[in-house]
Image (cartoon, rainbow, N blue to C red; front, top):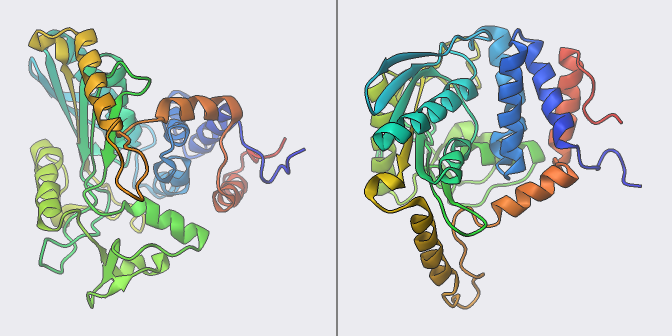
Length: 356
């Protein structure tokens, strides 16, 4: 029999634990269940740095007043193809999932739906807010202003940019839709925090210290900078995302961004957007688009790999099967995270999720 300290935890058990933990901080049960489902879904699809790993951060902000536990999500403005959602400083998953659903609803009528979010909060991986579009035969896109500034403008030294992630999805006749979810930095800060939790070093090229030398100790991440992808190109992309997800929505960008981990009392006014594009609006049926995409993807996978390289993969490949396996067999959380969740259960007074 597997050691209980190492056994996988059933998805439903982890989801119930997260929901119960959220309700201890005043989150209504329905909202807690919605957020818990999305948080665990992040782990199910392999985005562990943005899933249950973030629970302690969310609880701290709820506890200290930085996040509103009883948020009333509302539509602040709407046109035929666009809308703006006010997240009421609630848990970010609530506002961004509402934005995703509204964008898809609008796209069915207008061909495209673009929904911005203001007064939101960290909402986990953007893949959660673009994959449903692909599953529905649409193209999805989402982006966000990062929840802390870890990057200076290219050539500068002041921290004025975050990881500012971007995601895009597209349907395919293959087992997996195309789902690209990436930070505009070489590495997401979540990956660095996970390495710190595990006591592992990070590769050179992720961060540099203020002296410009490589920084590899994740425990010293506050002493350096994250590096943008592609140098000045990544910097430019990050600024563009800040304009679309932040400035356009009346949300924070630049020096207005609140460090949501160290400051647990201030409203972050996090900005995001979600887009849904109905491919049928362009005269090509959804099935025809999916078949054409699958054909091109097959050509790419068939490309002979360079010496020393693995076979070509497309963003999203293998996610469907891996998620199904985790749903059936449970989630294997790393030991450091398991210990943290056990301590967290004791702290907030809910049952240990790993006790059988």
